[in-house]
Each structure stands twice: as C-alpha cells, then as structure tokens.
Image (cartoon, rainbow over all chains, first blue to last red; front, side, top):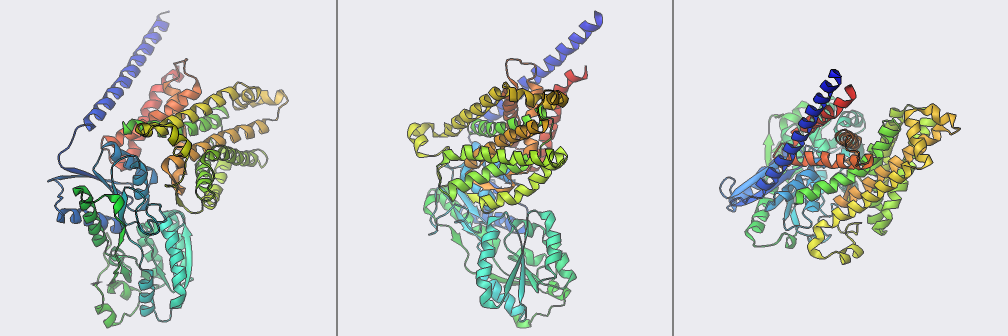
Length: 345
Length: 290
C-alpha cells in the first residue's frame, strides 16, 4: 500500500513539473512576442544570405557600403540583422518569415533561394525586397522578361559574361577544344547558364562537356572524372561548386588543367583567370537601390533589375605557374587586377 | 501575429506529413524513408500542374494524394514481393525519387509566383474580403488538415483499418484471419505516402515554389512531430491520437520559429531543436519505465 502511494506521489510530482514547464514556455513565448512589438529608432534591414562563400560575402559588404554612401550607416540610423542560411532552403524560408514578423523596413536577399523565399514571405506585406547575386531573375519568377518587376521586389543580377569568358579562354588556350563545367542540377541559375554556354561556345570553337552533381559531396568524383575528358574547366555562379572550389582545383592541378573562375574571389583562391563581375560593386549598386527605396523616393515595384555590363579581367599568375601554363605578358598587363599568390581562406 | 500564422500554417502542413509518418512508424512499425522522396514528389507534381500545364489548383490535391499512393505502393511492393528490408526499401525509393522529382518538376527550382494556387485563386479571392487576406492560408490549410484527419480516423475504424493496426502489433493474427499481411502493409504504405505527398503539394503552393531539397529531413520532422505529439498529449484522452500528432507538429514548428525569433543563430537551431526534442522525449518517457 505504502509503495503504491509512494509511486503516486512521484507521478504527481512529474505532472507538476510538466505543467510548470509548459506554463513557463507559454509565458516566455508571450514575453518574446510582446517584446518584438516595440519600435526601433531609425531603419531596420534584414539581410538573408544563402551561403557562405566569397562572392556572396563581397555582395553583402558592397551592399552595406552602398547604403553608407547614401547616408544609411549601421549603428547610426540603421540596424542590420544578418542571417546566413548555410545553403539550406528551409532555413532561408524561416529567415524570411522571421524578418516579416519583426517588421523590418527592407529585406536584402543574397542569392536566388533567399530571394524567392523573401519574396514569398513579403507578398501580403509592404516590405520591399532587394536582391543581389541572382543570376536569372526572370527564371526565378522575380521579374518579367522586359526586366520590370513582378511586385515589391527588385535588385541586381550577376548574369554571367559568357561571351567575354569564352573569348578570354580562347586567348589563353588557342588550341583547346573542350571546356568542362560542373554544376548542381538543382540550382536553376546553373541550368540556365549551361544552356547559355552551350549556345555560345560553338562560335569560339569549343565544345562544352558538362557534369551534373546533386550535392557538395559529389563534386570531387565529378571533378576527378571530368579532368580526364577536357582541356580546361570553367565555373558558373553555382553556389555548390563555388563552395567546393578547392576540391575542383585539387583534381585539376593533378592533371595540369586550368580552372577559370566566374569572379575575383575564385581567381584569388587559385583559378587561373576570370572575366568576372566585381561582386562588391554589384553589392554597392544594390545598396544604392535600397537606399532610394528606404528614402521613399521610389517603390521597389517601379525599379527594373540592374546588371553590371562590364566584366573585368582577373588573373592569377601563381595559379598559372602551378600547372605550367604560360601567360603572355601583354595579357597579364591588360588585367584589371593580377594576383601573384594563391590565397586560400 | 505573422509569427503565429506562419507557425500554424507550417505546423498543419507538416501535420499532414506527420499523419503519414504516424501510419508507417507507429501503426505499421515500419520506418519509412520514402517520405524524403514522396514529400517533394507531391510538391513537384503540383508545381508542374499549376505552372506548365496550367491546370486549376484544386486538382493538385487529389493528384498529389494518388501520386503518393502510387509511390507508397512501389515501396510496399519492393518490401513485400522483393523481400527487401523496410529501411532499405524506403532508401531505394527515396534515392530514385530524386531523379523522378527533378523530371516531374522540370528543374531543381520552379517558381509559381504569379499562378493560381489553392490559396490564391479567383474563387477564394472573391469570397474573402481583402482585410482578411492574411488569414486565407491558415483557414484553407486548417480545413484540408481536418478533412485529412477525419478521413484517416474514419478509415482506422474500418475493418481495413483494424487490420492495419493488427499488422503492426501482431502480424500472425492477421494471417490467422486469412488475410495477406503483405497486402495490408502495401495499403498502409500507400495511404501514408499519399498523405505525405498531399502535404508536399500544400507546401509547394504555400511557398509558391518548388525546390528539390525540401524533402531532405522530412522524415525526421515527421517523426519528431509524431513523438512530440504522442508523448506530450498521451494522458489527455479527449484528444485522439491523430489530433495529437498534428498538435505535435505545430509545437515542433513553434519551437524552431521561437528559437529563430529570439535571435538564435541559424547554425544553432538544429542543436537547440535536438535538445528540445530530447527534453520532450524524457518528459514523455517516464511512464514507460514503470
């Protein structure tokens, strides 16, 4: 009898603990929701970045610089909340809806998945979305074919300078026939870029050999296989492959095959050359667009998306030396920026 | 307010997924990884139907459900006829479905921002006054979730439903009744994946896009919801198990949303979720030890 009542008391205690903890969770919830309802001074911007790699980071820094030039300085009249989705689409969606809950004045979305989740989350609100590093806003459903916006969303696009890149590769490798491209089949920006490359490669006497992967873990196998079939490799603005750049470089260096990047950070990290975008400048341009919107001068829906039309030549002589590739002096001198060492962060 | 609506929307959509996982995991005692493939399958199918084929959104619901049923049947056939282990048949299907989903959707990312969805179409927009627009999604999802739940409750009380529960607990009983237990398992897997696929279809329309990676971890979310729901609400007999599974899903999503709202870094969210999950499991586990 005593044993039974002892167990009953234990059960009651456990019940109490359960009830108290549930109550506490409810109270904490309410406090947090109420706290969030307070107003902040100045403007607040939520930055949703899709992944961690140099190009996207450059965009973000450029964005903040662009805002600062127009009078919005972090800490003074601007609060920034920066969340990186670590290449997870679910986190990007959660981040976007979180920013909407916090009623930020503007969302800056860096890369396509962050842009589309931000647009979706803000559809029934007044919060404008300014994106950057979205290779194909039309394919992503964020803009119409004539560049006009589909809603309270606008930004800048890092459309690849395919013609210029092909021309550059031809200059460096006059005898090359096949260019290899590794891309993630699930990144729409890559799929449309591959189509673009295939269309234009013929005019320069190239054949494109593509290798599709589904995750970063597959890049090393794809690279090891591809280097046997091609004369060189070129990169797209594919988040997966760019994040795994060192793996690609490793495999390519073993066969002394040059890898051409799509922007400056990749060249710095070991790609031989690139006709690339200056992502920092792209970010700055985005920052200025955002500033105009925050000042109320114009609505996001009225702005067409912008692109940078002039790619710049970046060269890394150390990377060329590593694979025994000789670059003409005149070529190196014509570069916008030349690196003589490989910097791996 | 936006936070609460978002949590309820996501919680109920994943609640339907949890109902599917409940059938396979708890009733059939079959850890079904097909879910990671059938969830995006429903999404891919609905996006293809709305986007490229321009069909009315309301058709996506039955299409996704029956598509999921087919997927579940395949898993069942692989398990029963080819005698592959439960876990492995799920893995085989999940892997194959990656390609099929890409094929059905067209590419790895398909936006349907300007198309009519089940939440945003002429009929709905004409009935609901514009100041109530933000509640549109929640109400429609609620109706669909309740419909799915009640249909499942009704099914579980039929003879077929009882056989389903018997197969999970004591399959010799089923054989002794003269029923093919393999067939019962296939039926269970079909219904479960039908529900999961339906959940994916709603998810894609709520997000207004399809992304190939939405399936990764879906089974984990489903299991978490099932276990949270059943552990926490076990003692409240007024709530039927199917409802508690849906509530478990809402609680799970609420925890994640609150963690992010409170400023926890995106990297830490998964760890926090794991810790919360552990706490809930421990609180719910006490009864079993006696």
